[in-house]
Image 1 (cartoon, rainbow, N blue to C red):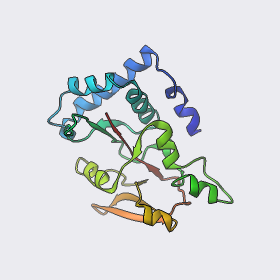
Image 2 (cartoon, rainbow, N blue to C red):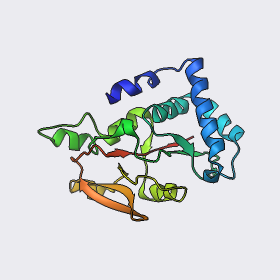
Image 3 (cartoon, rainbow, N blue to C red):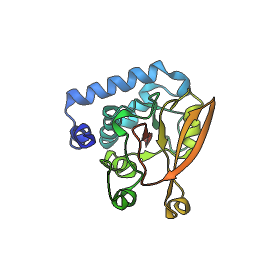
Length: 193
């Protein structure tokens, strides 16, 4: 199921699809200026148009329910960062264990894939804890769902992985076995353009 949703974005996009994604991104950018008050759409568009692979990654984020938008100002390099800004963890990226090692270790009831592998296939990264908390400054995200986040190697080495959610007006960083997966847990992506 997940593979089918992302397949159109693994090859060169046609002009119609290209324009449709850009229009969606522009409308979301203009509707949520509080997320990136220091930027103008023309700056962001120029960066996207210099990197066709970035537009493919943004299209995959959009197709899987992420509702990507620019969060924060430009970095020192001039790059901008797109985060998934859907209210809940993207629906097209749920029921995934953490990574390939976790998927391979499952003996029964394997999920369709892993968060780390799907992110790599899309050309994006999982949010870090710091980035997840930054996103939460602009709204209340994951009130009913949770999202896998980048996990320190020492935790992963011991079989665990981290996820975040927002409950009771606070952001929580929690742990689970990396092999676990739930219908309400996905991952939020980051793309630097």
